[in-house]
Length: 452
Image (tube, rainbow, N blue to C red; front, side):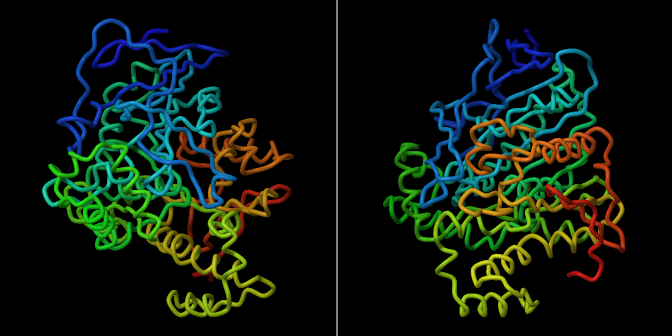
């Protein structure tokens, strides 16, 4: 199957009613003269470009420290990292579109993961677009003479590409939902807070993503630490002289010190703190679905063994910091600590935003407990249920055997319904604070009025 885009023709494949186009560039390769620069439109190409295999992934290293036991990594070398994948119904036009922004702490992840295979969405009448964007130092360094938030700029460029080209693949550019999980969810929050959000998408989904990027000083610190380790100044010219593989190696060493990348407020892309802007009404007219897993923090404490090292003093410090003294009888110190952090970073900010938005917001919680290493309902355990990819090796890795197919049917159907109709199938947020709990067996709508 051949489709004509604004820059040239691409050849995909069709199987069982699903058209698939992989590794389609939405911007020029961000290297050479374009390194540490805003994304530039891709040059036109002659002939037909093959779009039958995954494109290069942003530079990254595999998960480590125990996380590699449950989180997969796919690394494909090459410079054309600003690419996207498309799964679309093979017939018809005007289909709604979902653009997926992968997570991975802004240092890992990408659209080549098996979990994000989009055939189920296409099967159900939705065009699924999954994107790559610059990660780590390449995408989120804070240099003295270069724009910040380049990875976010890539996401804007991908959304513009979708707006200008998706009709050729059977999609409706006026019915685009942007969705993301973890760091991808935080990026969606930043996109939603931007003044031009409504020009690029009509709806949004934030899965386990922080609504605020954190303090700008922390984001700058990692760039300064890397510059010191490399013996260069924190400028575009000097960072661009460092080979990508050397920059990645330095990044890995510096990240081991406990610092991390983040979105930096104060420029054209992120005019102000996204969380503050959203609470002030930014994006209020855009329907939003958001939520988290019931035991988010177990991803970072169980596979790493940290859960057994968290004691009562850690819990006390967290209670004081987050001003949360709620009783959690029967829970271990590690689980209480994780619950405190999850509530502070996700549940409470999301509830506060939903209180402001009310009728145009839907909330959910994923509560099914994975038996793998007793992860429980940890961060990222919901992904294969959203994409209906429970048969993938990724889903086996984090979910183990006996994964409940009916839960995937329900959860995937809710996402499809939201993308198609703007209503996932349960009551919008109101004074009763309804939350759809996805679990098996059980689950259903729970009214949480009275909770913070």
